[in-house]
Amino acid sequence: MSGFRRLVLELGHGAADRVTMREAAIFAQLLDAELHALFVEDETLLHASALPFAREISPVSLRWRKLESDRMAAELHATAERARRHLMETADAIGVRRTFEIRRGDLALSVSETCAASDIVVLAQPPRESTHGSRRLRETAVQSAASVLNLPPKPGRRHGPIVAAINGADDPTLPVARLIASQSHERLLVLTAGERAARFLPSTAPGDIETALGDLRERLIVVTRTVTPERRGAWTDLAAVRGVPVLVIEQVRGDCSL
Image (cartoon, rainbow, N blue to C red; front, side, top):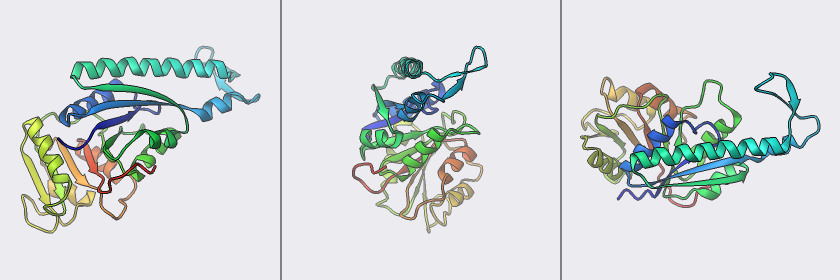
């Protein structure tokens, strides 16, 4: 057992596409974890729709129209139902346990109240012009006590070594990476910082990992979040450059403080 209970996938801010759902479901299967989908109805939008001067562009007429709270609530409900249906279909096809929850309110607070230390928050690559909600979700996840799975822009390789970048024999990354390697029937490649292991690794910083891996075609990178906060977006960048998921294990265990 990995010790992880759930993969938490927030669907209300850009992760409701089937590709992201499938990638999350596959990873949940490897960890024997539940896929928990959270759809946060942004209360800010609902409050804005109540303002008399609020306007939106109609997707049909392409003209400005009054932003009506009833219509906004109905559209959010329809979007959530569509996301729930897709999530259930995807999870059932992969064969993983799944749950779906709808919350209304602040994004960070909703995720905070939902996640636990045994969770992994899934982060999909944001679009080129990411929304405020997706940026806030990313910042929330990085600052939390939960572990974070950074997905690449496109589905990663289905085969290849599982890479564990560790700082010592007691690094919590090692047993997680070992389990994933066993479950996926792949070999485990251990990079130990400051020592000559399979390949030399000066540190577990994203740049050093990228250099050490070179032309290796790995399936997944697992690393422990260091005490010193990483450069914002560094693990996201590594996932994009390598084209594989990067799982960042949180050392501190306890409730999420988002």
